[in-house]
Length: 226
Length: 226
DNA sequence: TTTGAGAATTAGGCTAGCCTAATTGCCTGT
DNA sequence: ACAGGCAATTAGGCTAGCCTAATTCTCAAA
Image 1 (cartoon, chains in turn yellow, blue, purple, cyan):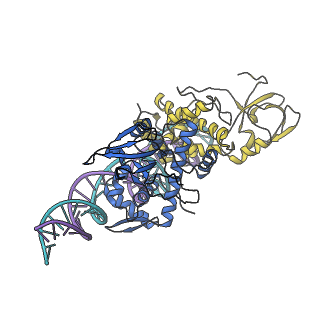
Image 2 (cartoon, protein in one colour):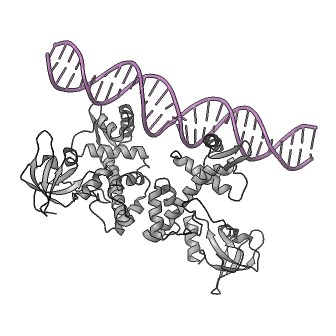
Image 3 (tube, each protein chain N blue to C red):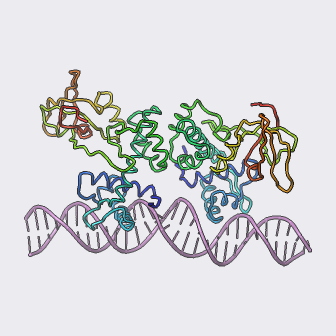
C-alpha cells in the first residue's frame, strides 16, 4: 500500500513517535538533537513528510504523526525490538550491544523475516530493556512509568524498563542487578539532584546517581500486576 | 582501516568480482546490465572507485579489482552466503527466497553478527545453492565447473552449484530433485540449444531446457572428490 | 506594548547516484 | 586503409539529504 520509505524517513518517523509519545508536538530542535542533524535539515524533511501525508506540520509549532505515519513508526519500532530480542536470545548478544546492531538492521529486514523471528521467539511482548513490542497490527502497550529519580523516598516500585542506548551504562546496570523486573525500595535521596539509594529484595542496597536514575523507568506500585 | 563503503559501492564491487571471476576485465556494459543501471552511471562510479583504490580502470577496456577491492567484495559475498545459510537453516526460508533477503541484509549486518551466525551454523563452507563461502580471512574455494548445457552426452557429472537468483526456477529445480550433490548421467541432448536429458541415480529421468541447464554448474567427473 | 532571545524557516550550496543526449574511441569487415 | 557500428565516455541535469548563513517568527519579560 505505502511506497517504500528511505532509511532517513524511517528514522525521522521514529523520532517523531518517541518525542510525541507523551502527547503534544515534536519540535524541530528535538528531532534535530535526536537524529544529530542540523535544524534546517529537519525543516526540509518535515516539509516533504507532510506533503506525503506522514506527518501534520504546524509551522513554528511542531509536528505530529498522521495515522499513516504512526503505523510506519510502530512498524519500525516492532522491527527494532524484535531484532533486539532475537540477537540477545538466539545469538548471544549482550543487552548493551543490541541497540546499535538493531538500529541498522531495522531498515533492511523484511516483514516476513521479522515475523519469522517473532515466531521463533514465541511472540515476545518486551524487548531486552523492558520496552513493549508493538504487535504486527500496530498496537502498543502504554504504561505509565516514572523514572527512579521521581519516585518518592519510602515507596516501593518495580523496575519495568531501561533506556536502551549507552552500552556501557547498560552493562553496569546489569552488574548491579538493576534489570527489568527488579523490585526496588527507595530508602533515601540526596538533595540537589543527588543519588537515590534503593534496597533490593535480597537486602542489599544500591546508590544510583541522577543520570542513571533517569534511565530507570518504574511502575510506582509494589504489586506485580500484568 | 577502510572507510565505510556505501551500499552502491558494495554492489559495484560484487559485480566486478563476479564478472572477473573467470579472469579478464569487467566491462562497463556488463556491470550496467548486472546492476540494472545505465552505462554512464557505471563510468562515473568506476572513476570514483579507481580514485579510492578499489579498482584498476583501463579506459575503454574495463576494470579489475585491486587487492583491497577484492577483499571488500569477498567480505560482501561471505556476508551474503552466510546469511543465506542462516535464513534457510534457522528461520525456515525456502532456498528460492533467501537471495533477495540476503541482498538487502548484507549491507546492514556487522562482521560481528556474521561471525556469530557462522558460529551458530558450524562454519558452513557452502551456501544453500552450493556456492562456496569465503572465509573471514578472505579466501574462497575456486572450483572448475561447467554448466549442464556444456556437459557432453554420455558423461556423468555431479551437480555442485545452482544460480541463486530466480526463486521460481529454484523451487522448480528442488521439486525435480536437481539440488547440489545430485549425480547426473547425461543421456541425450536435442540440437539447436535444445533440452538436455539426464538420469538420476534412482533411474528416473529429467528433461532440462537450455535456460535451466545454464544455471546448473557441474563437476565433470563422476567421483565425489572434495 | 515593546523588545530581544531563541526557535524555526528560507536561501543557497554540496555530494552521491542516478538519468538522457552527445561525443569519442575501438575494431572489424570490406 | 578506412567506414561504420557499437561500446565507452563526457556533458549536463535531476533528487535526496545534508550543511551554513541569513531571515523570520514567537513569546515572555520588562
